[in-house]
Length: 186
Image 1 (cartoon, rainbow, N blue to C red):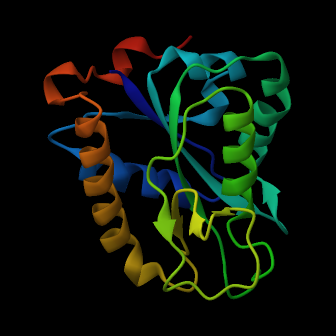
Image 2 (image 1 turned 120 degrees about the vertical axis):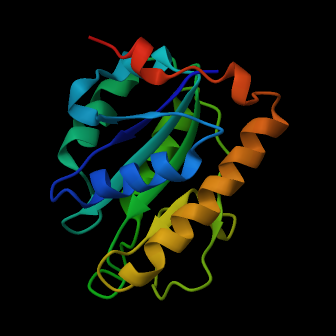
Image 3 (image 1 turned 90 degrees about the vertical axis):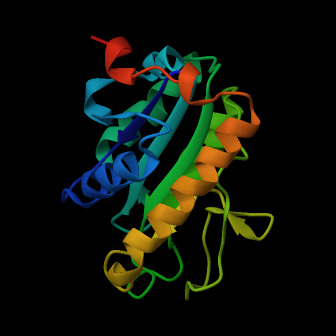
């Protein structure tokens, strides 16, 4: 299995969280962090496992780099497994909290990606609506670096442990995980 953490960021916060996640996955799983601007939609198939990090931008919108990927996915059949993490602000945007994570996740699944890994509880979040809630759970790790910054590291570490268990239960142990930097697309 080879994997990558692909992040989109406008302020650097999602990149920071991607780094925390990469560190928390060690030593069992080594993943490169890659800016979404360095890939094309079809590049998502270059990896067996993609962790996509996306902030909700403006009022419920996709971050710019992921928006470009989203727009190009209609012509791509995905054959990868995805897990998601999202950043949002539940205090200022309670009606669109984590929407970008949900919008992107639904599109990736629609295009053939396998999902269902890393869903998290909505407990501890105070919001009204979210497109990231599927069957009562977030479709990935939901983080709020504005209202709950003090919980980020703890949540990332717990989620990384969950991902490790999920990957290992799929028979993808540490010896079969390749360093994604060896397969980074041009």
